[in-house]
Length: 123
Image 1 (cartoon, rainbow, N blue to C red):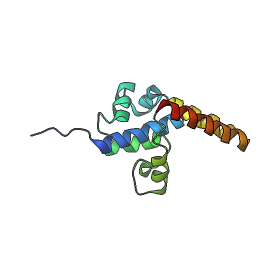
Image 2: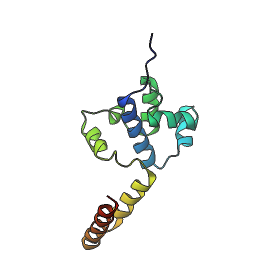
Image 3: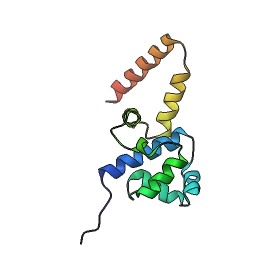
């Protein structure tokens, strides 16, 4: 019998776990400690290498202070998370936080124009 392996849904779930953990400024080690697992195990969950069982997901939701539905589609909060999945690195999150602190709309527009220009030159 073929062993079940993690797939795309596991990867998406892992991304959502990582998003919330980074948003809360919790390290993988800290989350692992709350769950009673190693930081390596948290890494495996976040990368979708290991499946997250129902009981473990409930634990993760509690540790990250969100309802279990946060990790699934079909809910308004899940759609909001879907739009933020690009925040898969600490740098992206830092950039967004810094941008949100800028109150001057002219400066915001200039920053976006600069980033678009840089991105266009990269492609």
